[in-house]
Length: 358
Ligand SMILES: *Cc1c(COP(=O)(O)O)cnc(C)c1O
Image (cartoon, rainbow, N blue to C red; front, side, top):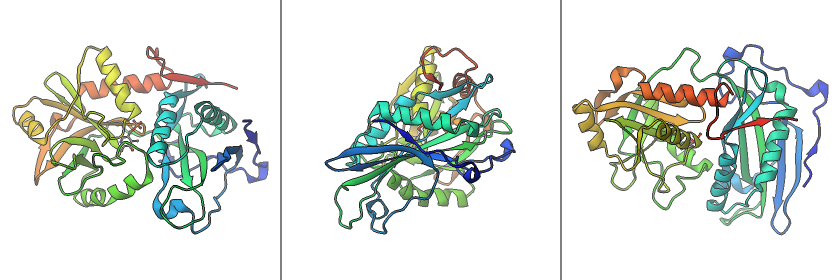
């Protein structure tokens, strides 16, 4: 399928932000977006890059009622010489298809998805910011667009990709966060959709997040839904602990999101000779590791921040500092390494970086 392009007329183009220190996250989007429609029996059709605009949906559009919606989150980075890079984009594309399957939504062709990404980024390349740590955030989304009430998989879908400049996550350097362990609420259950980037998961996580914020914490640390004992994720990031000489993260058993950053952290750490374990880690084990002084570092991983150090845990009404509230050595090394690979400042031994050219 040929991707058609309709350029935004010059007078409709938005003014680009001039102060890259004030970009923030998710507020500014570029001049164009990619759209493609699906109808049962016909498949995907009319791939199009067109001027950014509001969507037109009937009030009965099924995504609005039954949350048949999935998305992805990735970034394009601008290197020093002006080169444009993506970081492991095929992982995001494949993960979106995994989410699609679980939500009874149609599969996307990997090559067409990649072509759409590249084409859109190139058309709006002037929107990729240049400041250190800034990037172009990419949000592929699929919604059930059929107008019909009644719970069943829709017969019509819309896939779109929007892009917009985002600021550096740490404009003033690393700030360790305080996280709140909740035993009352859970994000995901075995057999559920925890491994999918499906909108419904995030709606269901808001309540516990607000409680944590009111108490002065940045994020919720989610435990497993059955025993409320084992660490799963933190907010919308994967979670890592360094206990003794071991880097530990939850295994991929269907209740956590298989982060691209998580996988990159694991592979890098292993390549440095760090012992890495993907295993269940209980709060009891964390508490005794803190008590005996062998819990050295804790951090969250995700596309937004790469890694985000955790400086304090709140569990059962008590506060526990981690690495004296500072950023751990491994945390910082992982951050710098991944950042430099993403921005083309370092060798890319794993072949993670993809350069985008006309
Ligand atoms: C997106 C996401 C992550 C991180 O995934 P990355 O691919 O590393 O960005 C982790 N947990 C949840 C719940 C997420 O939505």
